[in-house]
Length: 518
Image (cartoon, rainbow, N blue to C red; front, side, top):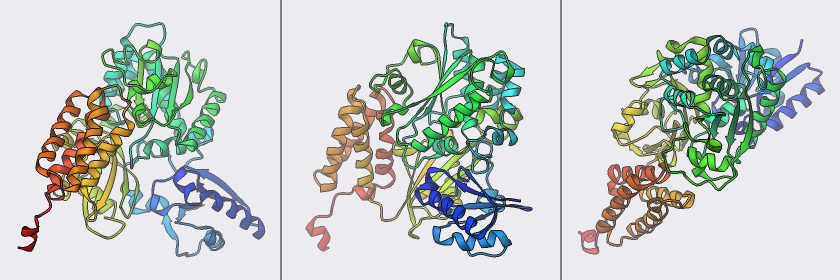
């Protein structure tokens, strides 16, 4: 009987040698005459342990990691004999970091072969779509609305309301668009799910199509994600061959098909109207709203645009019911959030849990503090446009409203950690520079405000008229926040103003010669 060995093909694992390790396992096993079956999976999300290799045992999959090519001989020996090894982590499902999660969306990620439709179905895949077909559009909409699911891309808009608006719109054609232009620093959940469980996204988009009356979908993936592009294309082809895309999907009366479109690398195309412009073959410029995409979207037709994680949550909601999903979370933030821990952190990776866990728990307990071992000074939540929170705010629960109440945002769920060596003046400058570089240029507050912001913060760093220039930066931020067309210019003030508010000492004027002497 073949020994089943599971090796991730996730980009993070590949970056640290997973492909070479897969080849090494095959070669060493062949030399020893050991019958093995190598199964390439996604990642379980324990990035600091990648490549994390697993082997099937009667007690469950045993994990080893991080494994290097030099470890393959001894690891294979330990696998074959079920003996001890320095890299042995125990049964994967019992690893404390994994065991304490609530994996609804990422339940199959790192477990199944992402290219196998049969494997997806064997682990509960397409049960949600089967129930959706039996329910019909109105009942599906009721389930999605009752679940409390909100957009996971950052805005947190109720998914049910968006779908209902498109469903009620009158048009000869409608579209489903998945926003996979994951450009925020410190975020990788979209990539992980596309590479590790792509059929989940397809099932969610198909369900959306049935609900609103759309027969065509597009998944817009950033060009920096070649592994995700390949995985999604392979899964779409497999779903089509299996009868789950095209005419009469799953033997029903409904039809839906989809395809991949690759972006050219503009951060602003993560904004939904910019994305639509790019999909239509034009430069990614933000559209003025109204009209909303739900009324006048792709090619002028009513369009559902949701993030990868929003669509990926749909199959669980339809399979288990709205209440099962809504039972997790707090307040108006229902269900789970795949939180991505990155930056200067000891245990970086993806941690899916119900809304309500505090920022301090995530950074200190789950993340294990900084990689350098120095004290945590600041964390940025919500990507490059998210606010910087000091330790004094670590009691903030991970919840849309709780973060908003403290002038922050959870965005796509990315957390980037900084130790006490960080210079917050440079971080504020980076936010303005990022906006200046990535601005589509359509509106003046974003295009010009960010450029003036870089210049003004540089003057502060040089010690030039610090008090006056600090006032000018705050004024610029207010102009950008309330005058920009989209969230790029509108959210850039979050990191800048939070740095000024919580780390004011970094921006203080340099002491005069006399003061220094005293």
